[in-house]
Image 1: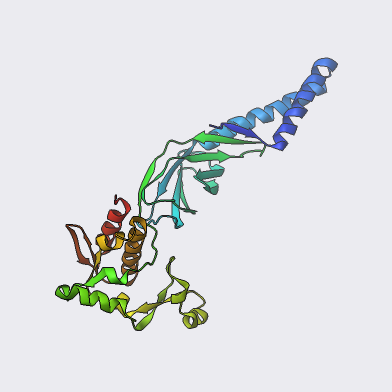
Image 2: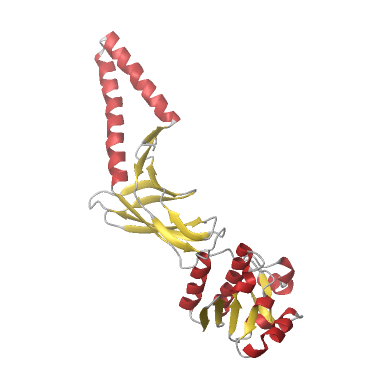
Length: 292
């Protein structure tokens, strides 16, 4: 673990201090002694101030309730200044490959910044490699401070639209499930548009509304926005492939979250009744995240 790194300017500063020390020893000139003392004094002051600056920081992370694999999300970084007298200056917080810079945090103040982050796979997402660093006060060195932290979050499968219409059946006609699936596989009428969701195929983009509003919009078919109580047959979805089936189910539930429509899920003998509550939909996504 790094403790300090020396910049090019720091290398020059150290070289100058060594040269001035040699001149002072060999020449016996009081001016050389004074110059060497001032240079070394600034270096000492830089070390003390920089160490104090970084030690006063306390960092925590906050996750959103919806996190999808391979999909960037906004990670909230919270920095608290534990000191009651001096501010924290130029502190960089790095989590994984993402970092955010806090320019000034007053004594006792708490600041929050957001940074983009992503997890590569579904399941439990863990962030344990937070690194604090600062060039304060003279930009000669970068100092690092170990920060023990372990943040965990449920990472849902990446939403990907698949051949899902045949695996979603209507709760109003459960006795005619086969016929209903056949109807869902037929051509559907467009009933509106909604904001683009990552994973939507380009063929579903509604270009006229996109050009009019300046943002991507996707066509909504009758089966997606009708308000019927629908159930996802998870076994049918994953029979074509585990990860692709989970991603397809994640896509359907995410659409239901955006539209507010009720959705349920049949997972073997486990039944999640159709619900329009966000909490219930997140519970289904959590099941998908840890499915094995």
